[in-house]
Length: 206
Image (cartoon, rainbow, N blue to C red):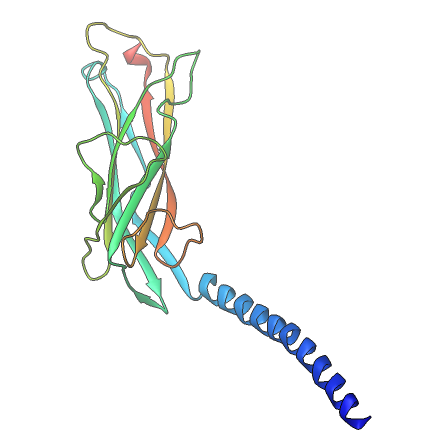
């Protein structure tokens, strides 16, 4: 009889052990995720120009209008500036400014971040570029974004007076192995920032 009791106790203990293990693993994963995404553990800081303005004049109203936004991105891991081996980047934008009196301005975007992207080829919105080897100086990467309203050749267009704003959200994502772009989980080496370019048409251009 005692032998049967021991067997039952062992069975109950075996049933309890996997359940306890699941709770333990769940708690460990929770703290691991919390530590990984904690602001104290990781952050990317943008330093530079995120907003700039181009003012039209009577002389340049029919020329390309380009606004440059550039600076540096510092990503920290355990409090120190660090990079991963490969860089990906993308921009998300509409390609059209706000409208004034039903008139809006089209714009194109070229962008580079840490070696990814191109300064000459127009970006396609919401498309990742990379991975490419990360280019950095002292573990700090540079970004440069050009937002351009192309010239309206062949005609003199009187734009309604006001400020036309183009918004571009810049994303970057570094990866240790360079296997993919755009981590679903994010991490210390990824982030985004909003860039805005203002195109001002004063009354003299009307």
